[in-house]
Image 1: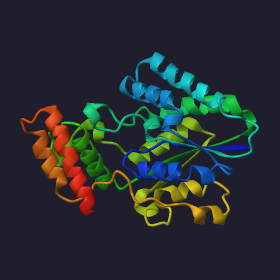
Image 2 (image 1 turned 90 degrees about the vertical axis):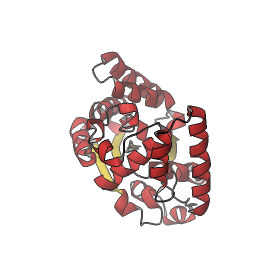
Image 3 (image 1 turned 180 degrees about the vertical axis):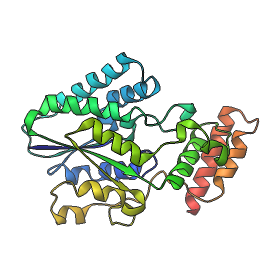
Image 4 (image 1 turned 135 degrees about the vertical axis):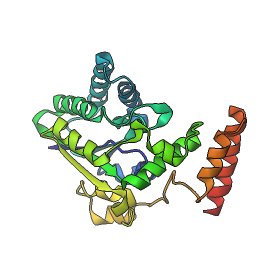
Length: 265
């Protein structure tokens, strides 16, 4: 059996930290685990985000299937090592980004990916979808911060929370995906639990593979990546977004402030 684990989300649940640690330990893991990150299937994530933005477009959904199959065809079926794919963009866009909708399309996306994985690996496939989740309030604030720093969002947190596209039930999405991809398994763990483990949010993913303890003990564990650096910077960024600064000056100001904040954290 070929175990394929697809870590497909969600944004702002420790996924960047997971991928950074996998990237840093790729050579150590390579004899035991085939690791594929976003750069390895970039065309597929472009297709999933395009379908997220246009969920009524059958051509966009067909593109998801086409690029999923192109990716799976590159994978050697006779290799005994299990497979781990990790990219939150497989579930679509970060909710709230330029008012694009959230994860409503994720069940259909995962269903198409599962269908193409089965076509490639047949009865030898052991397919698992894994989702990192998070407490709803802290997740909402984290997406607000991410959109503040990456776009010219001018909504405060209270107004942002009323947007329909950010009213996302992560656990409900996981349940919907489970129905869509059956008989494949769907698993999840909250960042609120995994962050206290030695490998952080990577730990529940590693639990899905029969790695010997010596390999896990040898992993270089990186500090959290892409976390909000210091309290209060969000209000500064909100004021900057509402200012008359040009896009270039706004971008530079945010970059400099983040650099200073990261040094202090």
